[in-house]
Structure formats: C-alpha cells, structure tokens
Image 1 (cartoon, helix red, strand yellow):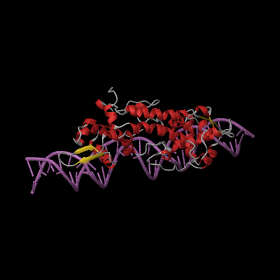
Image 2 (cartoon, helix red, strand yellow; image 1 turned 90 degrees about the vertical axis):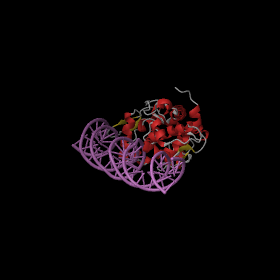
Image 3 (tube, protein in one colour; image 1 turned 180 degrees about the horizontal axis):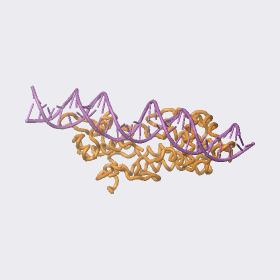
Image 4 (tube, chains in turn red, cyan, orange, brown; image 1 turned 180 degrees about the vertical axis):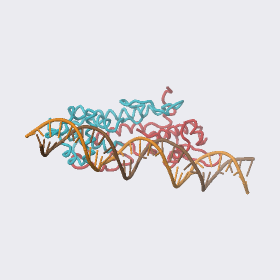
Length: 141
Length: 141
DNA sequence: TGTAATCACTACCAAGTTAGTAGACAAAAT
DNA sequence: ATTTTGTCTACTAACTTGGTAGTGATTACA
C-alpha cells in the first residue's frame, strides 16, 4: 500500500497540474481544496521540492508550481519521491537496488525472478502514466 | 516492499515444496537450513496454517507439510497470507477491497485507474507463479 | 522602510507496525 | 511415562506513520 502521504502528494501535484501555467498555488489553498492537513502538506511539498518535482516562490504572490511539464512527471516519480522504493524487494529495485541480505545459499533469491517480472509490469504502468494523462485522461465518474 | 516475515514464509514454503511428499519438515530443521529465527518461524508457520497453506502433525514424527499441491500455491497466496493486501490502494484490492477514505469530490480517485492497472499487471505474475514453478523453474545462478 | 504574506526548517509526539524473544502448554510416538 | 514435536499468549525494542507546533527567512508592495 502506498502511504497517505503519497496520496496527498499526488492530489497536490494534480492540483498544480490543473492550475494555470505560471500561476503559483498557495499552501492554504491546496490544503483546503484537497482536504489535506496544512502543516503536513507543507512537509510534503518540501519533499517534492527536494525531489525536483515542484518549485516554489516565497513572499507575497508566492506559492508552488510544477518544476517540469505535467507530461514529464509520472505517478511513479511522485510515489518514489515520497515513499521511496516501489519495488517489492530491494534486489529488483531499479532506482534503489540493494542486494537482499539473508537471501543466501542454494535458495538464493529463488523468488527474485517472479518479483522482478511483477515489478516491471507494475512500473510500466506507473511510469507510463503522467500527471497530464491523469488530469486529461479518465472519464470522470 | 514485502516484509521480512513474508520472505521467511516463502523460503519455508519452498522448502516444504522441495521435501519428499508426506515427509513432514520439523521447525528446527527449517529454521536452521533457511536461517530463520526459530521462534519467529513458529509464528509464521502458524499464520500459514491459519491461512490454509500448510498443515502440521504433532509429536514425534511431526512437522509441517504443504496443505495443497505446490502447483496450486502461488507467491501471491503466501504474501497475502502474511502481509495482507498486495494492492497499492484499498480501492483496487481484489481480496481486501475497501473504499479509500479521503478520496472525495471532483478529484475522486483520479489516480485509481493507473494503480488498478499496475496492480492487475503485477498480480498476473504473482498469482501465476506457483511454488512448484519456483522450485523447478529458474536456472540456479 | 516596514510590514504582511508566504514558504522553510527543526523539533516533537502518539499510535501502530515490524521483527523478534520468552515461556508455559498440549498432543503424539514409543 | 517420557520425549519429541507443534501451539498459544504475552512481551518488547526500534522504527514508521501521520501528524502538530513554533520560529525563521524572503519577497511584494504600500
């Protein structure tokens, strides 16, 4: 399961993607319309900024904007920035590869191949879906 | 990421799948050959038993066996039994469906479709891979 | 120049989860 | 009976999650 924090991040990003270009969104506005606790949202936006997904302007007329066009920010980007690795095992992670400790001897990563294929299939969707696609895409239920 | 507990469970299950049929495996043996803390393994096996994946015999000559043929136990079965839902969001879960609280108003589950497709792709692999396939399948590195 | 509006940063916290450990108990084989 | 095996309940330290609180730093603009 992705965290609540990631869900908030996605909603915030989508709102930025929906905003008029070069019109910064202020934290209290995002918090209110997306129903996200304000101080928590501040932290999330700082994380997204550190991750290079958004940029900010301070002072009056300040706020947050996407750092890149919404076509180039994927759902996977957002989740990875907030939650870290998406992979089910460290040893199948693309971005955060790490040898699994404890997998050793003869049964060394016997399951790795299955998890790797599952992860790849999942990533294809998550990396292939941009904020713009979500914004424009699906039929509103 | 799947939990350490699930990894242990998979290793234990694989060992049972590799064992001679109707030859129970004892906890200390599984613990030692798979390098799993023994008391922790006990709990895991009890969980797997409660989930219907293994059965047990008590007393001398006792031990654990698979409850069903290894062809019919999938990696997804194991992970779900130990970790619960595999789905990235409650609202795309097959077995544990639950409406996401907090997804509301106009942006109601705008991301749902993407996560649903990612999950479906992942599940296809994880449910399609049995213990028998893992045991017999991949080339040992 | 100053002041109000806005983001930035650090610290803190309660509740839950993870990865175990400990020990007494129950059943089966011999 | 006694030994060998699984069963069950309780406990715990460390970490993660989902926040809250308060102060500081910039910028617009009057």
